[in-house]
Length: 482
Image (tube, helix red, strand yellow):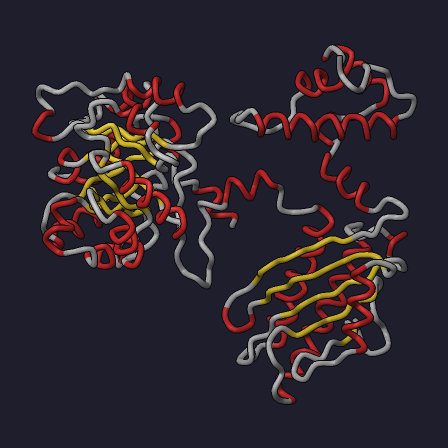
């Protein structure tokens, strides 16, 4: 029985709030269950409310409410501004290009709450080079809510002061005023709230119009995001392993969205390996493995050489550690590897130290179960599971050995509730890859089929067609909008 009891609301306002709450709970439930989409549906929301979907349709007709227009984010905002509770909202935005680029961080909330206290402290406690000032549309005309502008970069001369007290000050003030006019900020809150706006102005910025233009846009966007409680947890979880910070200049991928194609670079010829990498198609689903022969010839510093031509890719160092696990993890880590491989034939003590050190340093611990008679028993013997377990058929045994893919299901059942990936390796072709993935593999590891191909890109794409998810990446829409 639903906690809502299936009782019909008495007013349209009550119905909208009830519907928004149920949609929010359904979205949360879908995320918990790992659904492909967290978008609420009529049927799912009706189940949350404890009614039949036909009943929900009837209520929507009677109250003249469109399901898609009921915004659960608005509910979060309304809950944030309940009487006797202090509003505390946060917004951020980066807009522009060159030295005139604008970056805004802001807080918006009640005068009587912590933001109001910080507003008063900022205005009364001045700091050399970072003097706060009230934003004004023009002298003697501040917007409401009153806004405190705080320079992020130390102001050292009057030229820099002019940029702050001129285009930046006016842009922030005008954005606040327009946000009220456009309904982003509720009119009934302009005398109750204050805003603290931290502004970045590059010392070498020259174009006053661009300074104004970019800071206006960034402030308006930051305000909208603050009032929308942006970003949603769903967006953070989706983008966190795909995003690239523009100033850092590279991304640090993680393996939380399988399946993946891992390309084993075993050829002990660095120039040949670089040529192979240069021929790969762009895809968020490709992992590079620095193979054991390559590492033996050039040493672990070859990882940095490969990083120069593949800075955004996930790189695995296939050290196949058998002893001194902690030391070899450190070696791979120092050379910027994202993951390092320990041999399953090593002692449990060595593997435990290996995994502990990898987790301490924030890189993946991979365990290669090649020639391990009972992989499940070996995994049970460990204090913690590795991030990735490889069911590996050795090259020398590919013609006669079994794939052991049937073990994937047993491993999943044995370690229910534990988060780890399972990779398969050994003679995999585009014909057998879909079967491996259908058996539950998260990663397919391929070497010679790709690395010895005359057309590396074509050979790689054959594997990327194994699943719809692998074929779709890169997400070109995301790249465009972000």
